[in-house]
Image 1 (spheres, rainbow, N blue to C red):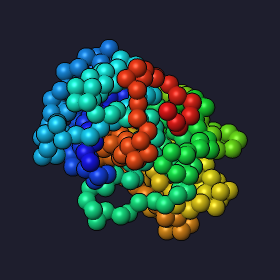
Image 2 (tube, helix red, strand yellow; image 1 turned 180 degrees about the vertical axis):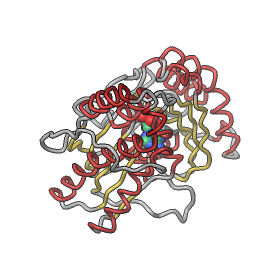
Image 3 (tube, protein in one colour; image 1 turned 30 degrees about the horizontal axis):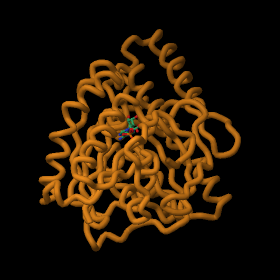
Length: 340
Ligand code: KG4
């Protein structure tokens, strides 16, 4: 049984093909057009998706070694995301499925990130969590602790009340005059810096919720003061600034996660989303695994940022339940729950 999956929620156009839940191909076209603006420009993202979608889908089907007539279903990201971007993938999926006379499966993007741990590249790939597990979902738009009870039953224990972790990293990086997206740049610089060099404010929020806007302001104000004394402060200290910023964010994320593990008694802990590519966060997970005997699940780099493979595996589980979408299903930009 072959599924074609399509992801176009933000600035990556991605297509994947799975055979009986095993990934055969995963092709992604990223959009460099946003770099000079220091953030994703929705209008430009939609236009780039329009250009990329046909070649990307074509490449995914060819790399899988099949023809489009062999497909049994088309899975697609329905939301949340940028409406103009989503519409490209959703409309393409509808037209493609209709022309082939096969069912469509709508997928919640966040659910896709959480289920990325079930992507299997071969029959022998069995390193997956069992239910229930906790997942720290950290991306440019979200920071959540999710209790995953089953493929379709997910509970958000806590989430950010303002900025997401990735958003905070990107904004601080922008303030430092580094490129976009800031995450990978901060990650690289942080590897050469001292994480104890500077101290930034940490939020004091009840429960499992996060907040990153105070940290962003604290970073900005500190930097402004230091720049008054030394106009080249950033150039002289960029590695230490990156390492200290990264450490503060990782500490904030891990503190709430430790609390969730302690309170729920669930010690299978996964991380997902774009920020899970961060080496400081990945090392903190490994350290917690040793120190607190957590069984951890860290995705391959290619499945951290937006990709169609995660949409494909989520679509596969929905296919097994015969949970198909109707042709009049609209895309959605925002969603409160981890459900469709
Ligand atoms: O999941 P994602 O691709 O898109 C959504 O937000 O849905 O996540 C993108 C975010 C950006 O904020 C980016 O800066 C961050 O993930 N990111 C990283 C790293 N790679 C990507 N943050 C820290 N370290 C990284 N290596």
